[in-house]
Length: 77
Image (cartoon, rainbow, N blue to C red):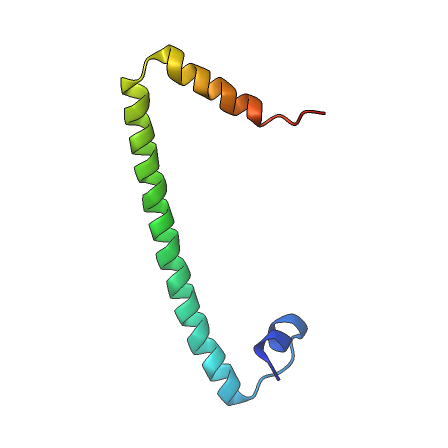
């Protein structure tokens, strides 16, 4: 019986399978938490860099880039 069957169909696992699954789940959760933290730090760094760019870039230039970006979000029909 695979872990997928357990997850999808709720089938029972043997005790040894359950223990392995629980150990792997903890490892996966830890890795996900670490990835979440890395992603958060990357986003903060981007915001800081972007804010610095906006401060030193003339309004006309960054305004033009924002307009281009916003317009690209609209679907053309």
